Length: 509
Image (cartoon, rainbow, N blue to C red; front, side, top):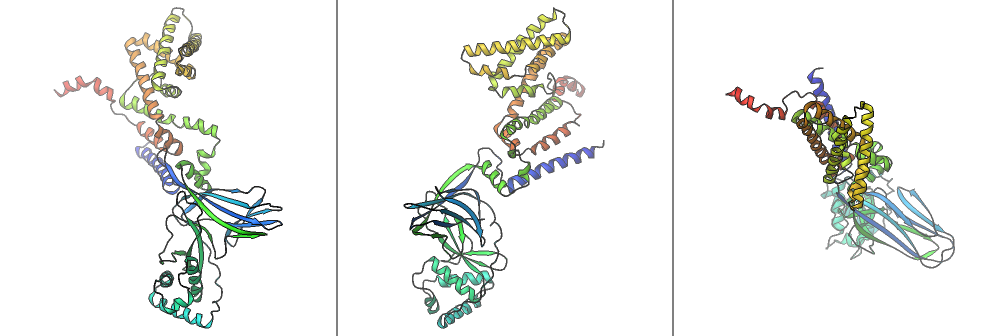
């Protein structure tokens, strides 16, 4: 096979992995490091009232696609009430009903939100009504204001902004004074701006929401103005005409009507409370991706059952250890017993701490090796001899567990999780090398296997590696590409350079 074919395959693997990881990080917002947290907000609406007799029906506008934020979940608290939600004129509503309420009543709606880029889905533009039927004097004032603003503006956005600043001026002219009472609040200014803009055939609407401040209680809704330029809804501050919502403004509902309606009730009061939270970034991003119905989430490990996730959390780390072994054997030149046996030993180290696991593994293999040398004098066949070694290894594991328990050394109880068959095969391989190549070579390969197993453990079970491979399993495509490249390596091993350094020095001389 030509070399370019391999390079092309490696390039495809690397590009695919990088693209998927970049999409998850930049578009879905997946964190690259474990333990990252994302700021979230719990916003609670409290609707209290007193029944006046008979069945009560309560309606409350609830958020839907708030710009700059995404809703992660929502909860309704209403004992003894029937509950349903519906959408009416583009606005979500929660409907509570009960037949015989007694005493003061309180209904709660709570949602958890977090910030996001973008402004959410595009809002439809409502059909504009006819120009309002202004009274004679009011109509002249409106026309005068429109003529003044039109001469200073270039488009709908600047037209609306200049109009708002004119209405909010601390020294308004007689036309503004006629339309807007002195010391008017935000709500009155928004209503007046909408009525004037209707005379210019510009769609506008009132927006009401709350400021997200940690620990804020008994908040009242804040009113804003939105105008449509034919493509987008542009938010305007009714006190300054500035465009755009503040970063801490959370849109609750749109429209000039009250956000709630009650039947057979009085003394209604609506207030809001806000609490800031810090939640695991991975959990919140996963929930956001699920809400957005991302195609990536359909094939995410998070969609699998938890017990299956736990299995793959370990299996996905095996290629990391395998790549390390390939590098250490083919490039460095470390000799081991078997190709992938050190990876299996490193998996066993996960159940203990590394030092205790290495010590116990060394002790069991050394004792098993003594038994293997004794069996050599019995002249047993290969298969029965391996069976005897496995049985002895199990007995040794049991003995170590019992002794560690008696000595109150809990780590020793995990020795039963070691791969006994792998240790039995290791003992057999050590004995064969000992007989064929001498004890020095056997000890060298044994130490090499243990060192590689320790390095594999450190590489595989580092918290950042564990997290990254589980969250971005496409990273294994990079591991695959590197293994393919190492598969074509035919240069000298580092150990060979050290081995023949005297010959190299002599040849230069």
